[in-house]
Image (tube, rainbow, N blue to C red; front, side):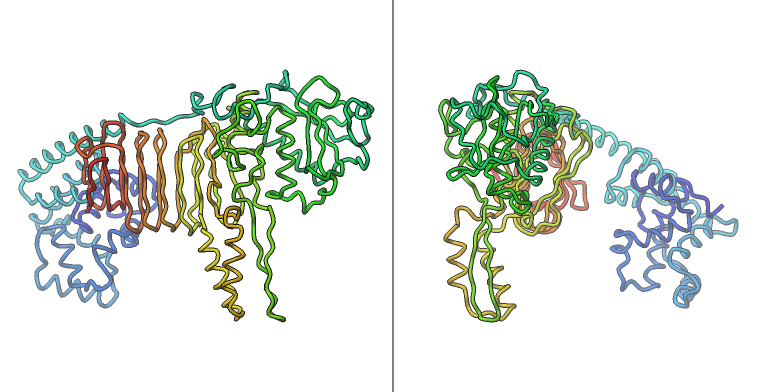
Length: 603
């Protein structure tokens, strides 16, 4: 019987090991989900953090025996028992988990002490009642158990206390859940419509009237290109390369993930959008807006950049193809009349249609240890490899949003070493931004239509890292050269700033950050925010029922409410429940709360 797993048998293990009632979730796990017998559960208890904290490595067998007796029977063992069990443990005849079960079995045997049996039965009854009421606070579970002895009156008193705690817990849970918000799809109210700022700055007013569009790759010059009215210089015309074709197909596939456009390949020469190559001196490409004209929607790319290397993600040629394809779908330059865009939005962080690069430049330092020479070269190879946030929003305003794409539980990752930009379109599911491997500081805004910065490495950090690398190679002192090489292009070099965007209408629920000093701002649904190491700031401004784990470091939760409007419930073990006027939150590992009127230290 002793090896049978039941709520009762596992409760006794909790009492013996911790002198507390089992928490509801823990009891359910061991009884229903662990697939262990009772002996296995008892052994597994000693792998748990709580057990290791209760009985650190320096705990002697004698002290351990005393603790178990106090937990079970509110007394110390007699000298004869103490000596026997201590010898058994010292000799290795018993392990501590087996000892615990032996003491429980002995108390319940016919030859056991009736008073011990009564206390154990009472504690078991109280422990089960605590778990059955759905309570999980380990400190409360200890306080409840401390009331119990062999008298039946102590059981009644402890159960009354548990009932009061359960009622209070129900009230708290109801208050927490009143702000709970879970969304299964997109936030359609946050999508841009035609004419909305700032997307209107990309609207050309020339669009395809049918969402079913064909595209193709011209292999010969179409007759209509020779029309003198077009003034096309066809000298040097050629088909685009296979590498460029593959990028075009990739860009078209991505386009269909966020819009309601359907594009099918047609190489008969009669496609709506046709790709060509020309030698271009003053441009990297050009395209015609959608129209019924013979060249409407057609695209011309510079034939000088057609290699596989030219068309790697992040290169200027790749970026140009996406730019010209967007023209062919009806997007204009944001700096053109009418409806010029605000200056601070006129860059590639926001739209591939801008002529203003953001931090899209990469630097290469070339050191030759043979002749001790050093040089620096730059390349525009950290360009956005796809559509940026305003491009997606405007194309959706024109052709509709794809609300059936990426509806599962997706995870998105990014780091400085990727030298890239990511815009997330996700139409449903419970989604996560996972940047746990990053070491630089990150600033994550979970609201749709906003930019974030992941794993930022400032120029000073990059300079210091490069100098350390050269020092490890025992290079001469190139500090002046290296500093100048980076500072000369300070406005353009990639740092990770604004490298992540959440498209308009998208809900991202969870974020897991790395070891930097990170900032995370919530959105209006329930968020699970875990900020790992570092001194982090979590801003709970937009509602929902958020779960926050600050991890290690000194972490702060900032609230957009006055302290008088927020109820704080200390749950013990570093856990707090907050209930405000417009939000609720469960906090772990948070040292500081800031309100609109004051700051409070927790713990």
